[in-house]
Image 1 (cartoon, rainbow over the protein chains, first blue to last red):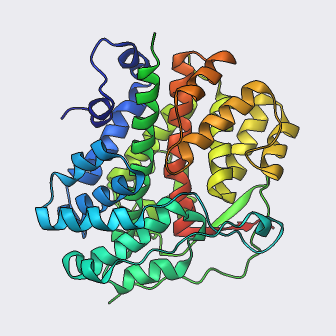
Image 2 (tube, chains in turn brown, cyan; image 1 turned 90 degrees about the vertical axis):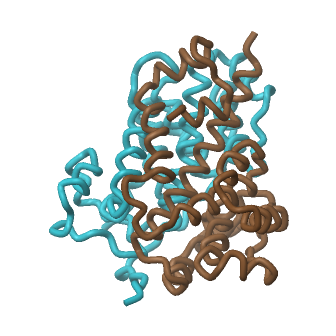
Length: 192
Length: 200
């Protein structure tokens, strides 16, 4: 399989960035292995392929990264893809925001929206994905607001403890992959 | 049966950013050591991590944990060329400070202080936040980490120019991008699967 980060940045073999990435060959190899373990796993466990690609498309949409979004959403049926795009457009905001434990840091608390899936999309997404999208929005934009009840909401919607680990890794990994791609793209464009 | 979240034992939550050692208490059940297979144990990479509830929780999905850990180690520990270790840790601490991960910031502020010997500057970043006065090179590294962490992502050619002006070559800039981006991964796991607690 082609290296996804190289593909999304447009790094060609023999280029300067190819050589720079080669100096961190373990990071390059295992960033790709992270992708493969989430999107082409040996065992899908309790989280279906459709759920994984749907959450990935939503995360990319929230970041406003059309190429990454197209990469993940191409695996989805048109109806689901459209519902995700509509939700991401409504849910997209600025971050990171959120609250700190009560004390001196409370002065740094920053308010922002708590996203709930629109009524029109709930049927298309289903109960599990709707709960996952609400959690994903918090992870992407205001992770310091996380608390145990958010995980209970996922458990109540049918996600097991192990499924939650996979979902959390997926959203967190994409938060990494999207930034590496964005950063390397700027670096690539600045080469003299 | 539907799983349930855990109620952490009585503890004191840290209410400021600190370089002190902290504990971490999970909100959902880590694997029990005796239930872990060879594959689960191998996914920890460092055998000693079996004592960590954080890693025993992530071991529930062993393939992604192992790949995550090997990515992490190369970004931060590979000594070949690129950004000095202290400044990779600075990028991790600044990212954690902005996202609000008190646990991650404590670990990587300690590393940044140890490797740079600039304890006061690191503490100022924790106390005052990502706008703290440091020096031109560290401020450029913090600003680039902030721009990569912000949503929408604000990292642009002006950040590259500023980093080059303070002496970073392209390999060092690529390391900074790796370190700040990786902490956008790590912060989200640490913040959302459990909570920090003061020790002792």
